[in-house]
Amino acid sequence: MVPSQSLKLARLLPFSFIVFFFIFFSSNPAHALNIGVQATVPPFLRYGKYCGLLYSGCPGEIPCDGLDACCMKHDACVQSKNNDYLSQECSQNFINCMENFRNSKGRTFKGNKCEVDEVIGVINVVMEAALLAGRVLHKP
Image (cartoon, one colour):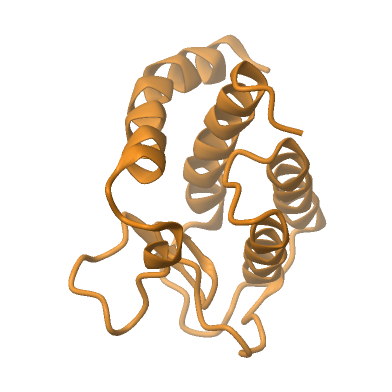
């Protein structure tokens, strides 16, 4: 990792922990984290049909591109682990999937106005925080 990236990551980690602790220790039940169309609180970040902090997408819909497919796989993994958002396996697989998409220079969905590297960067910081929190809490 380049030193400037390490510094940027170090600055974003406290925010990531705040987001995660809000998610995991709030009074909302886990199933309430799917804040789709019917929700009154907007997600922090949203990309495609499945990507987003506090957003788990459009179940049954086909992902709109490779990055969205990574998010869909992560959602399915977390769900298969009883909504354990700190699952080491799910977080690491998600990070690997996003990196593979970035390295493949895959096309994004038609009409996308987001900078994919920025989206991946934000999600990656949160997933790194999840990995760290999962290690601290001894999550598999």
